[in-house]
Image 1 (spheres, one colour):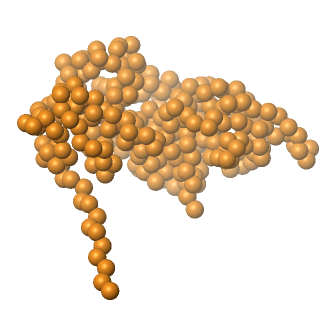
Image 2 (tube, helix red, strand yellow):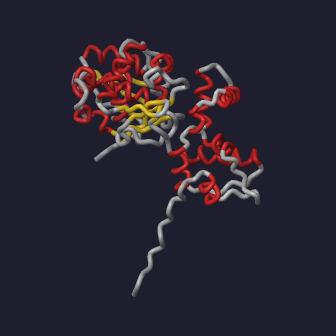
Image 3 (cartoon, rainbow, N blue to C red):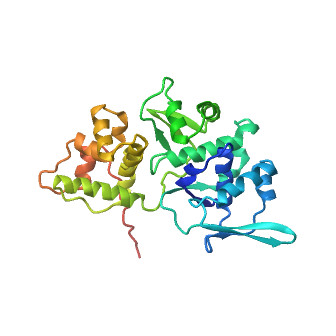
Length: 313
């Protein structure tokens, strides 16, 4: 049975020489959480070392830096049982910005094309990359293209890691089919391990963005329909929150950053729904935006509605 684990995007705040292994260890600890009590009290250092194939001393060095991180844990306690020292990990009930992973992340058979000595670092890199992906996607889009399609200098700044280290592990992930290059970005390939949608409010955020654009244009938005929002979000996955995040990395306001994107004709804009609506000059004559009109204007196909079943006696 596949189980899914909530991982906070604040794993980006994990630092240290063993950053990628630390991120992987945190994900493993989080995967063992009791979702009723939001605690974990039956995990030893030895077990972490065994299941992740990480030296025990490395685990002992990393874990204290994790449970002391207020972004990751709500607290911790030590206790003794059967002559062993255990840690009670306390998790937050909710995290503001998060994504899901499946427990298949920890199965080595999913990394058969990766040299064994690099598997842990690459799993940590995939988790870190997912934390930086646009909401609801497995895609990281570069602000500026690199020579070979990957801007390693930008990744180094975003991931707060040495450029050569990122290039080393990313190239092996590419060769192993775990990541692929896309137009102006890179994408995590396994959507079973890394489901697309960041959280259950994703459609709410997307619909809120549509309504805000409609209000600014004096248009009445359509009623919320998750099947329609699902299709739109696949074509235009960039959210306002993502614009704000990118702006912060450039020390700009979201408004100024958005203007800069338009002035410099950034290809990423085609992923931003409000921009596409304006660019396509979506403006219904009667002031009422219907899903049918919207999908025609964007040259998309409306989702099919299930047909009502008929019964015969």
